[in-house]
Image (tube, rainbow, N blue to C red; front, side):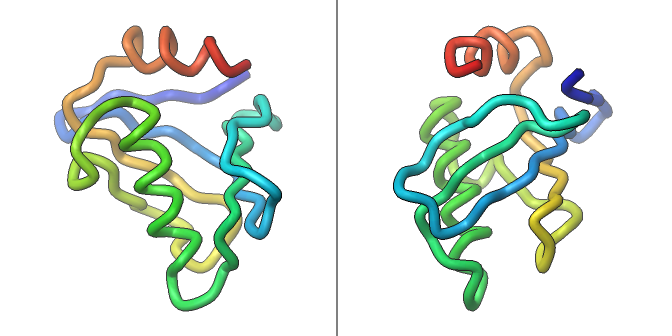
Length: 97
């Protein structure tokens, strides 16, 4: 089951990133994390930037509202999404699960 936590800064979401995929997409839930496939390679922060851009576009929020709080050099990351509630996030994400 996907783990989501809300705090005063925003919504914290665990994700597992698969870089160098054929397309950018959400591939379901793996353990307590959202599995995300990205076309960018994990070189010089390209996959991190692609991840932030992907979620900003998907959720229709500014790129500055999506931050990687943990896992900058790992496939397992935690995103901080500002200005979005758990309910709105899940309504959007459920379309892709």
